[in-house]
Amino acid sequence: MFREGARILMDPSAAWVEELHHASLSGAKVRAIAEDPLLAEAERRTNVANLLHWASANVLRPGERVPPALGPEALGTARDLVRRGLDADGLDSYRTTQNVVWRRWMEVCFTLTTDAVVLQELLESSSLSISTFIDDTLEALTEKMATERADLTGGTHAERRATVALLLEGAPVDRARAEARLGYRFNGEHTAAVMWGPAGIASERLAAAAESLMSACGARRRLTVVASADALWLWLPVRAPTTGQVAQAMAGHPQIRVALGRSGPDLEGFRRSHLDASVTQRMLAALRRPRQFASFQDVQLVSVLDQDPARATEFVNDTLGSLAAAEPELREFLLTYLREQSQASRTAERLYTHRNTVLRRLARAEGLLPRPLAENAVQVAAALELLAWRAGPPDATS
Image (cartoon, rainbow, N blue to C red):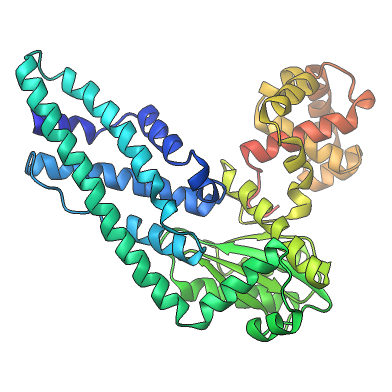
């Protein structure tokens, strides 16, 4: 029965896996993980890997002690927690997911037998198995994190990361000492970027992409902080690059994504630009359709509108009416029309189509709106922009 239950657990439903992820990213101790799209995605991969590790071990050897889960997912997440300056509290999600898995396991066990004696024995042995597995895994990961922390504190990376963290928090840091430690001056303009790639991407590829971005912007130097195994934080001592410059820089790095902040002067610009880039990264990571790069200006309005998702959805439905449920292509067309200052000829040129086609599509879109477009153009544009970022833009580089 233990083996049969483990087989069932190896094929979890999508809804149950989502419940597992939600639990693992809830709570004050893991807030920093939940708010970081890269750490959150790594946490989800680790959840699934740990579940399959325990279940497959019990398919092969039911009831025997399961070895700690120290696969690439768990070890990568542990390293990233240390690099972000997070302590072992970041592993609190293991206990949360343990509770969720136990509830699901009990449901499975009650489908396997109606014999109370056998059921009691099965629950007792499996409870010991799950708790011992989690204890052993946490002990092993804590040791790995201590080793990683010792390695980092022995080099310049830890100093740079700690100094940048203080600057971003607005702590009173001696300016000259911070500049010396980082090898970066704070006078003039600064543009921050967050650059990341898929899990397991080689650090050399991230570094090459950073060099390309720096070159395209005309910057002679940059400040780089390793944020995680798959991400870099960058600062360039120049004004924000144009869309064309970023497209040129990233053309040779299709797997790497970039989020840019607004440029700003001095220490406050250094700090604010990074916070902007972090907001932009969260918006990019949440898109259903991939987009390689975006600037804070691209997401600023949407980030404000979407602070209360329920009210934002209400605003979209009230403003767009039936258009909200229409095909995405029609909404994308109307948004392009409004971006082109409601000029049919410019819209036709932008979409490489005939002006009459633009007028026909416009008439259809207006027919779905609850109010005439001329009376409500600003609100319609805002609602369409919000929907576009929720659903993903039509063009990966637009």
